[in-house]
Image (cartoon, rainbow, N blue to C red; front, side, top):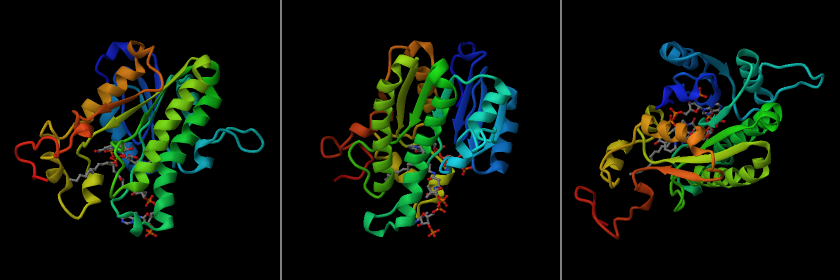
Length: 264
Ligand SMILES: CCCCCCCCC/C=C/C(=O)SCCNC(=O)CCNC(=O)[C@H](O)C(C)(C)COP(=O)(O)OP(=O)(O)OC[C@H]1O[C@@H](n2cnc3c(N)ncnc32)[C@H](O)[C@@H]1OP(=O)(O)O
Ligand SMILES: NC(=O)C1=CN([C@@H]2O[C@H](COP(=O)(O)OP(=O)(O)OC[C@H]3O[C@@H](n4cnc5c(N)ncnc54)[C@H](OP(=O)(O)O)[C@@H]3O)[C@@H](O)[C@H]2O)C=CC1
């Protein structure tokens, strides 16, 4: 995540799952693969105060704060608070899935996707609220996906992301009195090596011609929406989902064939 107005976030602290960083903002990035995280920290350190935290968001023990004796654990939230002393923003960006027809998804595969995208978001957000936001307020951004018309070939993630969009609204209302805002961002198609590797064909080339803008989105275009929703400029926005897809989620080639796309 790169911040489009650096001064705005000075002195603030963010916890971002699945990578990312903020300029002028202190950030913990949390995911499973420490090697990749450390590399990201090296790359991003010149842009701000950043630390890596190993955390599998599917695993309650990694996420939660206390063991049975109320001792601190090395959990993501705890370690962010220990290092930076406060926490202002949570960005639930960690997630993923694989393409498959519903009839071919095994229970293990279903659980992996639901636990990553839905349960992981629940665990992280519950923990941040319990440990800090309940008392101090804060902002949560949930990254979802373009699942508004269903998600054929990705039904597991469609179900999980739709559930997260619903959680976004529940939390927005439950925690408004505590000064917590909760919004979602739904990116369109953005190049990602891990998604590329998940397909047997060149999904991003195929997808490009199906997007009205005729191009993929960029991580920066997603992050500027995230930063806007984190910022005081969005202080009266709560429970909303912002689509960052250049209108892709509205497009149907039955209505208008975009030159270069395959006719229906
Ligand atoms: C024009 C068109 C526009 C199309 C428009 C689409 C454009 C793309 C949009 C991109 C959106 C993005 O989100 S981009 C970000 C994408 N990044 C990712 O998705 C990250 C990579 N994905 C993952 O990490 C995985 O999918 C995920 C399941 C979530 C977590 O994997 P883990 O290995 O941690 O999970 P485990 O608990 O070990 O379970 C793995 C089980 O999941 C199932 N599984 C995993 N990969 C599988 C696969 N490829 N095929 C079948 N099944 C699979 C199997 O049952 C596995 O069990 P076994 O069989 O026993 O091993
Ligand atoms: N790229 C796109 O077109 C779109 C992406 N999205 C969503 O945006 C988010 C970022 O995507 P993008 O950067 O493209 O994809 P990446 O695959 O590059 O990033 C996903 C990140 O999630 C982390 N992650 C996955 N599972 C877990 C877990 N169990 N615990 C902690 N971290 C986890 C991964 O790190 P690690 O493996 O180290 O755990 C990885 O850093 C994801 O939620 C994605 O699904 C939504 C719509 C479109």
